[in-house]
Amino acid sequence: MNTRPVCVLVGSPGSGKTTVGTALAALLGVGFRDTDADIENLAGKPIPEIFVDEGEEHFRTLERAAVAAALASHAGVLAVGGGAVLAEENRAALIGHTVVHLSVELPDAVKRVGLGAGRPLLALNPRATLKHLMDQRRPLYAEVATATVVTDGRTPQELAAEIAALLKP
Image 1 (cartoon, helix red, strand yellow):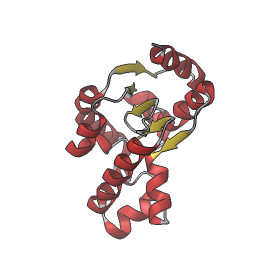
Image 2: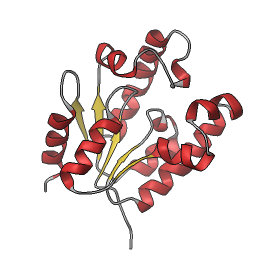
Image 3: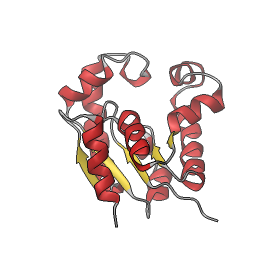
């Protein structure tokens, strides 16, 4: 039996993948899974420590494995880390799935993530770094997405309801 996520959420840091994903899963009556949490459980430590101790490339290796495992085994709502789309392997794996890009503009993203606490890629000059990450990744999110939902100024419940409506056949 091939298990597939009901929906995969992608987007930059601060787009609401975890918050909206949790609300969407509750609305749909399915489980929620976040590949960042999977990576932390596998590594036995938080993502910032993985970056410091083993480096970004090691983290990305763990991330590719986590995305592949979750896509093959999770039947609920799945959130993948903001940088997962950087790997061609992950983008290819997302083909054929219902992928929703949670789009956010810089002001809302900054409000949501704060200025980098617990986010290793945002440790130095967080606002400029976040803008660069968003600009770099936006075309990749668009490439894998089957739908894009703008999150700015909206509640997780509003977004969950919109995405749930998109998922209806």
